[in-house]
Length: 415
Image (cartoon, rainbow, N blue to C red; front, side, top):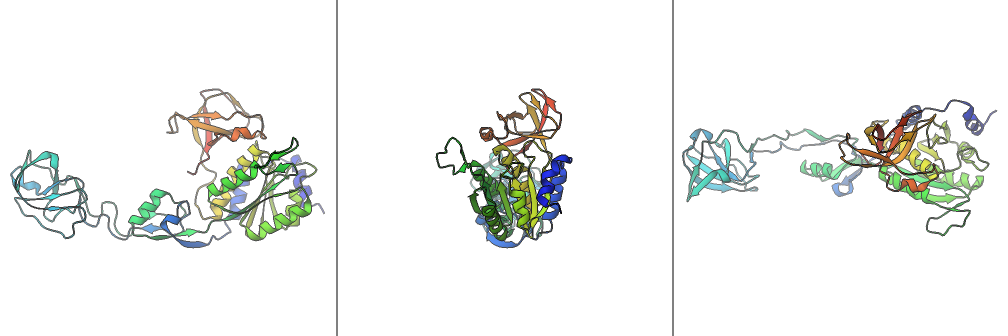
């Protein structure tokens, strides 16, 4: 019987799986998971995914309020002088009433008294003792915020599935929430392979490389909203790899491995995954860089095997890992994410596969005049091209663009 490893290694003889199909397959399996929820205080909810909607607990504003520092009056009194009978500050309780010929000073945010239908700004008035003089007859319904203007009790302000921002949490606080229900963060393991790899804090020999991939993957996952609970370097030994992968599968919702998924003599990962009981989903996708990506599932754990080259692993984790973290963590972001467009600053080419390049964006961030500059690189092993990158530039197969042409990209920052 042909082994799963043999099948995946022989897949170069078959057409590569298109990126959109691979993404759809991965998403369909993630949908079977049911994320758990927890109640957290608002300060602890930043960047978490909301699990239950947040709605207004009263009409907002609950009473009419002044939008200006001025005087609440009855517009039908025209330009005639008024007697000033008091003052209302923001925070003054009670709901007084004025009669024809009267005015009441009111500060921004103060309650507009009963009877009044307009507020005249201070700069359009003169005051002589308790007498208010107006330059002209005031129009009705000016500078008055109507009760319920922002919404009535029960209006949903925040929908479930949203990754919470500082502005969202300020709105939740104004709805009367002190805590919110959020989805539990997916836990992730990052396992870097390779006998040539040493920790980035060490001085490598001429035959060694610093383990910057593992750091990048940890930070990417944290940016997506995952909680990295395990990370380690594992030598290229099947027994050690099986032990590390087995432990990660038992403890985490997402297992990321780096390296060992291509066609080299020590690319053991597909066989290791099979021996650990991971169900094969796909191996090798029509991408440049990142073709050797491997994906599978065991129970409620997703496995992504990333290529070992720095640009490849970074790109693949952005293109696939973000989806997994969103789905395991309850986020409702649509995939594939919509491309944005700008203008390329240089000539660009792609060949048989869709190409993704680290790039940086500059200019007016309005989606039209934005300039897209690919980071200088000499291949997928050129980690220097990750410096300054804030987006991935996208080229369809067989593209040939010139400076000034329209080009597509995906921003790396959360939308």
